[in-house]
Length: 126
Image 1 (cartoon, rainbow, N blue to C red):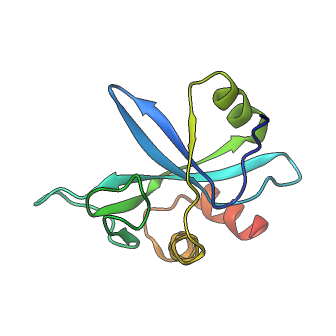
Image 2 (cartoon, rainbow, N blue to C red):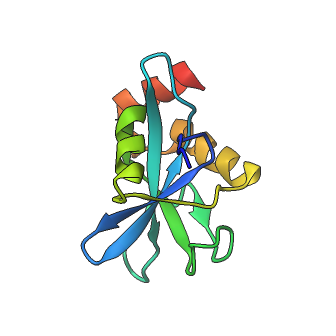
């Protein structure tokens, strides 16, 4: 089966002994790149960017209240994502809903934690 990363898709990316959920926010652009952003659990008394909070169950992987980590958004080459999935490093997961993708996308323009590079890329491709 051939994998191709698409907007709304998600990837489980290993970090230490855990997997982190990354959301693919854009389709592949003319330069064959895509914007991804990860999700992190909200911990009591720990600062987090509340621009886009995701409740448990909004995606099957999310078991606790979580948030989008806009400051860690990244632009990856589509080819790199394909190689990581085919090499069994990244695992595709279920796509996010249209509603959740819209909330995540709006956050790129309103969060104070989005870098200028990422914000400019998002504006160009969305």
